[in-house]
Image (spheres, rainbow, N blue to C red):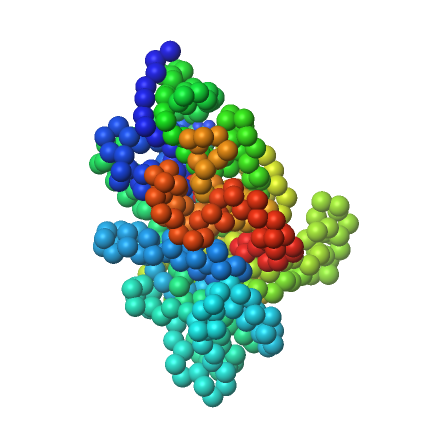
Length: 456
Ligand SMILES: Cc1cc2nc3c(=O)[nH]c(=O)nc-3n(C[C@H](O)[C@H](O)[C@H](O)COP(=O)(O)OP(=O)(O)OC[C@H]3O[C@@H](n4cnc5c(N)ncnc54)[C@H](O)[C@@H]3O)c2cc1C
């Protein structure tokens, strides 16, 4: 069997593997970094991403992680004259609750010690300073959080929202990027540093004084020897761990999105990424509800659904596409490369989103033909924190479980993984994002004790 050699093998050419290779290749030039993936780069989970980012989390560790990642994203945007199409209009969280005390308490926990300083209030009579940011002004958009309870301000800036909305929380360090451009830029950098991408699937890994990987490519079976293995196999990270003979606490939960041409202009092109925080019961006619209730497989559609349905315009002010998503599935499944999306999802997400955006009702029963429906796995731990750092096997590292935040978290995941491999200084939060956190019983109890895990 033909056998090649590289210093470091990164398994997976999704956004996380590419980011690991990008940050590793600054030190390992020449033939140092080899990425291995049988698929085209960025074509599995990374192709399904909504490509949104935010520094809003229910725990300061995750806030620090994404703030670090956004810092890195911003420096790439600056250096590349914004090739990654970074925008920063924020995330607008909408609720019908006028008493926002619980939400504010969560914000303050998530933003840690600086929590209170980051929040600005806009209540009746004191709201003249609130303005949504301009789409193109990602470098000068404000930081922090605006809490808007002045209904006249809500109506002024978000006239198409459900009139029952009583509180808006505008997270300002948030927006979207082009994940595909980011991945392409990273791969170019790896190649220009001497690294390469091998089109093959990793079938087996032998451990010894070095790793020997068995690869299945178009030309047959080959071997690849390496000192270091980085497991960035997305939904298959557990399979790679099995090859190394150790378990990883990762599960996969399928989530979906639709993108459609909003030819009726139901959604304002300048609207930030908007999230309806409130749980809801979907709006059916009595007849529809009765029919759905009769069938055991559709009964759930008449029961209360969780909040966090989201919508945003795609493609700037001149475009007409919008994206809708709702991560309501909670059931793990075995990953497949070609999972079939649930055909009822487009109707469900459209009905759900119409509660905050009543103008979307115009599409009920007549979804545009220009629509795409797709999905992918949230590869995640129970606590919804990523796993980045050494595996139990000496020389093996994992950068995975990036759930619904892998596009925004990729830069941090790559930089942290490279620092672990290089034994370089790490930020204070890094150890909590590695397997080491499972030794911290108090932290794990806190994370698994029913607290919000920030799944969006
Ligand atoms: C519907 C949806 C919406 C999302 N929206 C957002 C969002 O708005 N913002 C955000 O930040 N994140 C979002 N995410 C999450 C984000 O897309 C993922 O966290 C991220 O893409 C994961 O990247 P990855 O590189 O780990 O995995 P992947 O992109 O799946 O890449 C893994 C790669 O590993 C390869 N591989 C697997 N096994 C092997 C093997 N044995 N040998 C060789 N190669 C192998 C695969 O072929 C694949 O190419 C969303 C995800 C979904 C599903």
